[in-house]
Amino acid sequence: MELHESMTEILNDLVMINNDRIAGYEKAKGELNGLDIDLKALFEEMIHQSDANKDALIEKIEEKGGIVDNDTSSAGKIYRAWMDIKSTFTASDRHSILAACEFGEDAALRAYESALSSGLLLDASFRELVEGQLASLKKSHDVVKQQRNAHKSLQGK
Image (cartoon, rainbow, N blue to C red; front, side, top):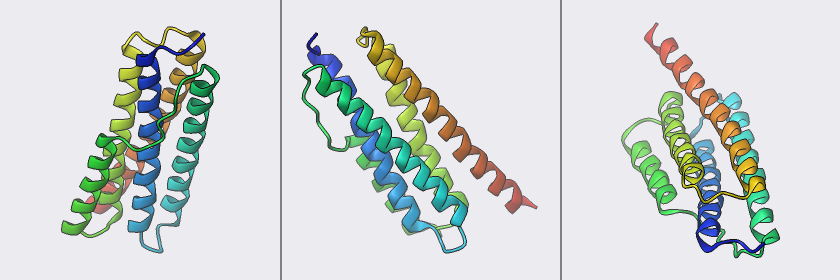
């Protein structure tokens, strides 16, 4: 079965959001100070997760004869620009970095939810892959949010 053009487009959007996520976490790692070893490890884990997601999506697209677009999306470029602007105006503190990462996680979740709600992922193997990746991304989002909230509550004391 050859991929329908709109299904290829949706899957390529997910490839691109994973590329954006990788670039966003690379940027976030660069903003951390030497004491944030735990966040560096967390961000490396998120990068690895997106690499695996991207590879699985690319494999599925190619398996079905689709053409892979392995660039970054406009939304992701906006996300990275937002992180650049934010870091210019505020110190690269833990809370600000985590808040920016949560913003990026929200964008990734919206992309996956949009793909699933489009109705174009009729092939069960595609739907299963995207649902599995979405569940994994939700867990990652929650970890980032918990880290941000924990840091915020420590600052308030």
